Length: 114
Image (cartoon, rainbow, N blue to C red; front, side, top):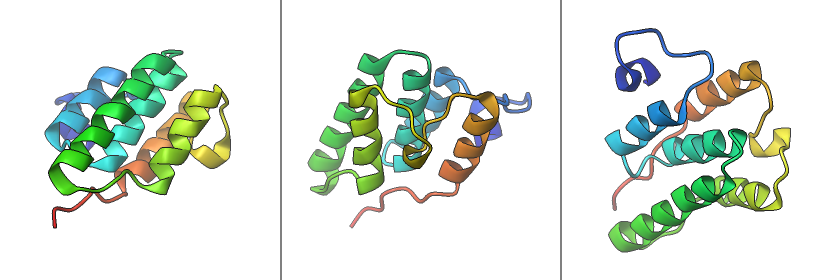
């Protein structure tokens, strides 16, 4: 999935926010893509951008589906707001951990329309 969104070159071992943004733009209701984008902004030290991604996604879900983000996404937001990085929330400090988080999140399902 990353390769399709990031171009013909192999996906980077540590995805970039620009690549994650393309993935999120490709399927704006794909919650795993929104979490990945939040996560990457947070790892780069841009908590405001990470929170903004959540707020836009939350509003889109409310407007289009009348629902809220999953508990996993809300937990990631809480971690970002606290400024903490924990393995339990999916946040990591190394490229290796980030790559495994990306693979795990890529296996998640997007929110489905009712």
